[in-house]
Length: 472
Ligand code: LEU
Image 1 (cartoon, protein in one colour):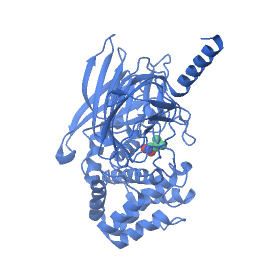
Image 2 (cartoon, helix red, strand yellow; image 1 turned 45 degrees about the vertical axis):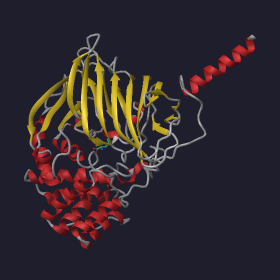
Image 3 (cartoon, protein in one colour; image 1 turned 135 degrees about the vertical axis):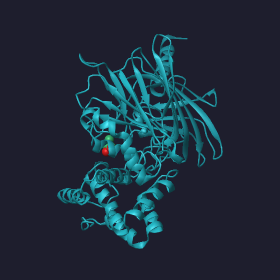
Image 4 (cartoon, protein in one colour; image 1 turned 60 degrees about the horizontal axis):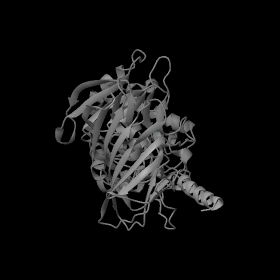
């Protein structure tokens, strides 16, 4: 072999490794169709049904962006899939298997896709493993003061390094290969190995904590009910875990286990709100029906970021550690985590319901509900308004989604009265726990359960370009 041709083939080989990953093959001309979300048209694969994610992750250096592990996906299809296309901005992929055999793949970090050249037909199920290691990806959010996804909080003089997820709307793909759209919720088994002295916490019930080689520990969690990918909680910190008595508000009166995780050195009073979690669960389940998961609590984080309703374990910043925010995130366990969105444009179905829960809680504490509703109405009147279905990324978490969304529910309540309204909320959760919900579904549910007047009252709030009259 002459030098130039050796170099040429070596360079070509190196280039292909760089572009498509070791052991991978060049891109096939076959392409996947995305889910077609109206706000995020590139996310997800249409027809892909991920049923379960089994994660086996190593966080060797907490507080950094390094992550390695293996993700095992159990996948099905609702239409013939010519290849598997996962959302992934994360660390470099080292190997992929399909039903136990090495499979060709292509990792395109710029496009945020990991495609696996294997086909799947409706009725078939496959097990796919993805092994990866390196630095997590970045997903800057133009609307939030952070990059969504895997968070790294560097050690400082006072606190050790920590990591956690804050992934709404599409940050989970920064560290896991996922079908990153709420319309494809899945169950999770999460195993995380951390260094000595650290604690891992994740969505679901902790089933195991074992010593790991090298002095660390491996924690395992089972999330037995499907949740959207963005709602997966995962924390690594020098936490103190605080257990509290279980609350009998689960399905069929089942006990909901209670645990909260607190970093050391929190400002005085930070933990106070969390002593109310059992009461919050009791009041909200009175309106919404059984709590949908086997455990609930909060993990407190120190950066000044928004709170997030991560399933079974809300992610609560120190500065948002108050009962109002706790109520809001707890309500999302029903609305967002159990009743999932069919499209990001309908995010008011999450935020409007969770904001409404703040009123239900305040009234249960004897506060003046009418004054709260008037306060909302004044606030909505001072902000730009719009129909409830969002038309852009900028609108997702605006005053309309939260406040106008809550006022829309108040309009239904004043039309039908408290007893019918409670049955309606419970009926919505029961009917949409296993299929993604859209605004049109809520309008249809309203007509079915409460009649044409209630539907018309809601429709005015969902559709009018201006602010409808105060619902009293
Ligand atoms: N869903 C979050 C909330 O509870 C907001 C998100 C932007 C982090 O309001």
